[in-house]
Image (cartoon, rainbow, N blue to C red; front, side, top):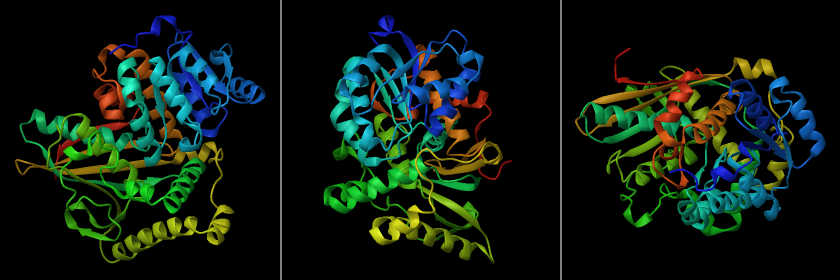
Length: 417
């Protein structure tokens, strides 16, 4: 579904937030990987910082135009959206700063990709701008980083495999974070603060965040929630590796996967039950590790929910715009297995692997390839518009791009190497 206004655009891709930590990493990735003739611009609120950011990207980016724009300036966001075919934005927290750009892109037919993990922002984006984006042909794609591309594309791969092998739909499906190395993003922490503040002030927001189908296109059509609840305590399952704890990002990723299933008219299966966990291992240390992870998560959320403990945590947690050094980014990785039982009774596993710190280097690859898919592969993308997910907006085209970038996506039978 090509954008109706693409012939009038000055740029193919604009990186908004190019002076921030992940924005710079994304711009650097595009400077190294994008075709030389792709028209790329950098955008942000400080001309001096934009100049410095561009200078660090090397010769290939030396002529990239710079766009000075404030995220809260609706007219500036309208001009920005009207000047490009695709915007990749790292400017968050998105509930605070992101809605004017979403509105402008939805109205202008401009494709949009971000890194939000904020359920309340995504719900508002759907409610206020899905219809405009459908009408204009824009793909508004949230969660184009570690939140929630591995989850979303991993579930899509399971569905494709099950369909291709006549295994029926997916039933009990569990994402397992087998291992990872990386730090927590300052932007992620700031977004979490904002979500917790909203939940504390507004009972409706708190209820929405707790709804497993909070991103549904039509809540009335969803299956009964039944056991579809976020895990909050230790789980023991030998088939999944032993003892497991809730995964911190599961409260976002699970809702994205369920939205994908709904937007695809429940192609994954009406009986899909999806959860996300983190592996702690077997006896004797597994139970203690799992309890420690679960307790640490509860302490983080609880600590950020109250002013006295938040003040203490703010001294040690990373600030927005901060991030690990290059050595730490390069040494990071993540290893995910998504286990699924199909309607035929077969068990299959989707393996996702990537090198690089998940929230920084690997996320820059995911956002960069999302922008390239939206800009270069439009005729191959799913025929869709509106407020979408990575799986429904870019699907297997993005999976192919990430494989070429060094990420692993493959499906195997459970028990097979």
